[in-house]
Amino acid sequence: MTDEANMLALPGRLDLQTAKAMKASLADARGKAVTINAAAVEWVGGLGAQILVAARTTWLEDGQPFAIAEPSEAFTQGLRRLGFRADLNPLEEC
Image (cartoon, rainbow, N blue to C red; front, side):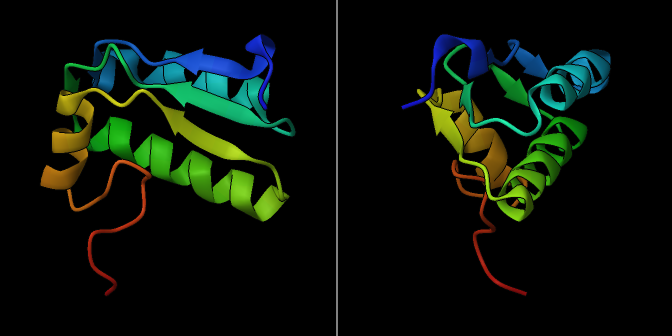
């Protein structure tokens, strides 16, 4: 189980304005198990999704646990619109 120090809460909007802070928070957590709380997400833009997908890939390559917790309906639907499931895997393989 992930401890509180490794729980990152996403902002309401995953867009250009929040991208830099989200990327910095993820960079600070690198090398440790992390759980992303997506409960407050109201909108997912392409850049926000790209940062999360890249982070998930990095954590998998590092052999560290990476989880999405409490995905809001908007988070799930926003990712689906962009071609991803709520676990950040593609809806379809290319």
